[in-house]
Length: 128
Image (cartoon, rainbow, N blue to C red; front, side, top):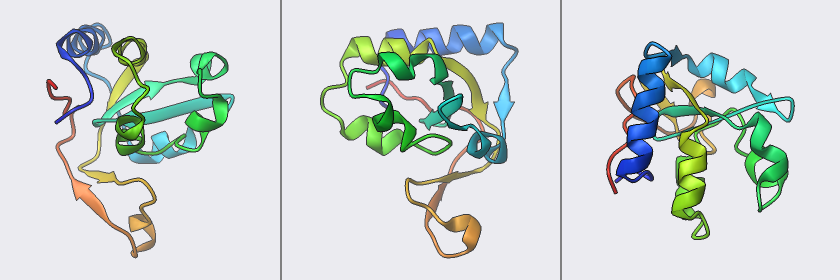
């Protein structure tokens, strides 16, 4: 089950079409891991949250610890993420992850020791 409702999925799909179905590699996502250039991945969708960091109610650190990573489980675990928070996030969509490997939070697969899950190369957001 994905983290987005139907309204959010429509917003993501609209942005995807407007942007020409953009893809971003995991290598590129991993580089965007700082306050001045911050992306997170949720349900295989890449979100540029740089401009949102200072407005996040839980503080910048809550997002920055997931910067350049798959933040799906972290985002979904936080019970305080309202439908409004999910709508705000949907508007920050910039691309789908263009790789078949989606590292799970804390994954060290690129070091040969961690876990991950195989996934399609497009955003696999599902109605909740």
